[in-house]
Length: 448
Ligand SMILES: *Cc1c(COP(=O)(O)O)cnc(C)c1O
Image (cartoon, rainbow, N blue to C red; front, top):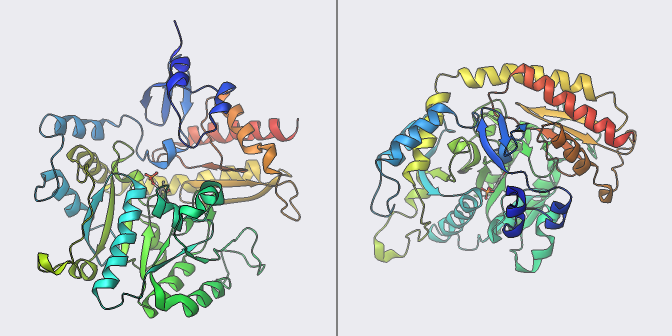
């Protein structure tokens, strides 16, 4: 009899994976989840310190969310969302309206993060056509950005690792040099700088503002780029320029939303609002694929006209507004509503960052420890003084990942950036455990 792992390997082409790697690191088949733990088919326990690709917010098999989905599944599993609706979707909007940045009023439903980005791009493009600025057809985005994998989302993304090969298929994007606080060319630090690096963005607005319909940005945290963190002031400046040039500011809060940065949404740190906000990942607590593209009354109104005017947003997804996903999303907001989970997470974040600094900072290959909310990243370098990176072919991060798996911790680094992005409910004991394991593995790999 073949093992589950062998049976998987026979059929499944896993995401973002070189399948040949699976010869030496076979797929780990997970049987069940409980809180921040996952258990494989042999009963081995793993701490899910990356929230199963950043989406698990409140633990696996959370009884409240599970209960809400179970209840819903016996009432209504799905219904067409054009001309029809469902109670759970309506409730979700009513709940969200009081927690999202001000000015956002209308909700468009899709079923994954990339789809919500596509929706945002199309919405902005069409808005400008219908409001007397048809010359505005281009998009601005930052270097090292990540917005998903579909063609539009991949176009605005700026990580060569994912997009390089597809360049001939992609849109031509106006690329703004993103802040790089670890290797700041102005030799400032992110806690006290005046965003001197914004001068590049400023020039791009001056040169291309007239032809640009929207700028999309991951607020404060460029996740896939290696958890690169930049100051809120940069977002404020983007908001000012977008206003000055009649450009929509699209907040991709897919990874940063739902308390990951210490506030419900990362944009709150900057005290400004986007024109369009994309949500997914934490939205359903990691239970069901769902996303939202939330926008202003002004954008909505530009599409609100007689059907024959041609102003309709002819955009849809089969699973838009799925009631099971909405039931999960409502349960998540119910759990978060009294603020206890976020307060605890904020308090634990201080402890987490403290022990990570204590354990890692002195190591000769640790270039930087950076954190926002419970997210902590450790950037490994070959040479601390000149911040020279390791050769990527050494795959240092991947080696650490493999060692940590043996010890029951799921780290999955981004290149040579090891990071922790745990469910908000992680406790101190588990923080101690995962940081001990990560440090042991780091030493194992770098000092052998
Ligand atoms: C994950 C992610 C996406 C894409 O979401 P998918 O559901 O994987 O398509 C887009 N933007 C950001 C910032 C993300 O982290």
